[in-house]
View 1 (cartoon, rainbow, N blue to C red):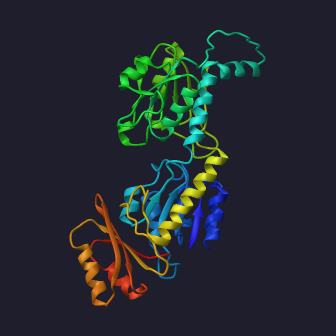
View 2: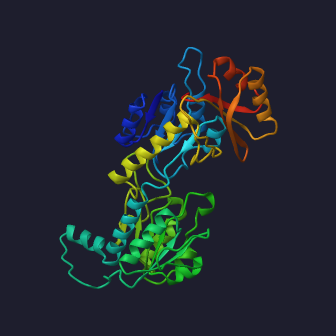
View 3: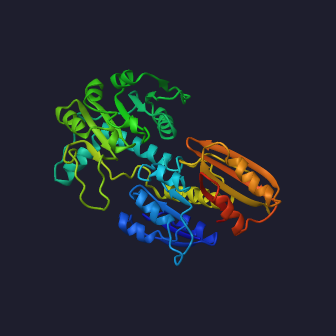
Length: 406
């Protein structure tokens, strides 16, 4: 099995795949579409982070081969991060390619950075530091505040938001939060409506996901609703916030400080970044590094690589972001078969008929569906041969068939 890892994915992942007997190529940066299309031929597992775009053209190149080429096709994609917006999941599903990410491992890193930036904003440390680099000694308490006793408003109370809640309370802050789902409050945190949060909080921090409905969630109206002189932080998704509206509020003093880690347009390389927020005082700009600590990247490398190998070996699709969630306990010596198909009537009957006609007994079986997709895992009493796999691939509405380890 060949594994291609892009964007300097942790060496932990490289070692996990090599220990499993895979051939691993690890590159330090993302690849443009044309380069990735050429590179991905013969790759079984692709690992990316937040810069690489996995387009339908890339997926077509990964699964279509001439007889003279290596027959292995892409089986799974690992996003070694939280976001999967740059992976065309619908196209991956139609080709039977599983997509996995890690929604957990960098949450602590993001939470710690948020708390650090809150202190820096309230003490105006960044603005004063910039002055010091220019030779200005501005020893003044004007505009500098403690965090203790202030109200923090958290929009999005998931894995990151709830950790920030705990840290903020430990520093003596009052915490209010808003979430579209009903979630359990941590400590003394209190759920409130969205507009109440904006009007009440001394600082507002966003931790929402990348769903399309969150686009332009925060604009001029939301900034107007916030308290005069409040601070604003966004370490979630760049398209959530209208940066022109934020810049106007910072210039007018409506917003006294901001920390922004994500942007509507982010450069693919290390140069070419431009933002209307550049050059404004008391504004912290960071290059999408909220979850970029060595600890987080090591944990992500371990988690995602383990999920990919488990899927390859057993078909376990739990936590996949695009396939039905299907799991069947694996027993040593089992002959495992996986079948991905369109979710239409009669598929299981057709599969079972093929197995029965060949005298193959089904020892265990599990099925799950997700929208237009169906996914079944079988344990049978005989090894899967090429003829059986060919028959199963010929079943109408079949997307992909694999035996364990393939």
